[in-house]
Image 1: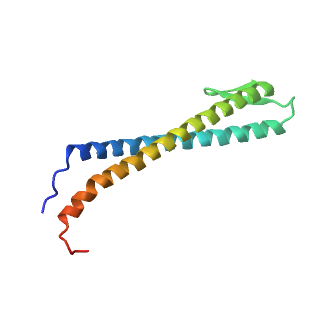
Image 2: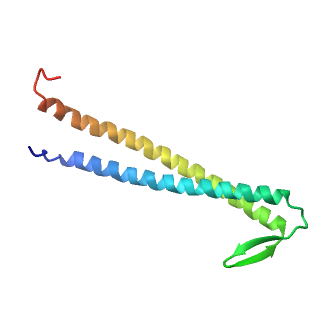
Image 3: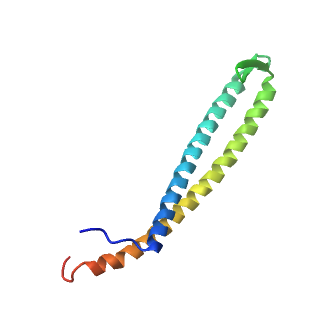
Length: 126
């Protein structure tokens, strides 16, 4: 017994569902990367906070380590942390939107499939 062909509307809904799932997955990966960046930045700021103001501080510049002033690096890391925090909020909103869209589409797909399932099932079979 072969599967009946899906109507174009349902195929379109399933394609949208799959696309949104892929988008959600991409957002989750980006969000995880931003969270790791935030964690690393927090650790760096914590370590710099413990360092004396006159202690030598170095940062990577390509393949080199360059001596920099502690205040410069603190300012740079603080800005990086704020930017990452903003990116995390944006990604969280996108994640929420994608999850809502998936839930809505799942309902539409279920509604489109349920009547057919009920029609193909003989009466009295439970």
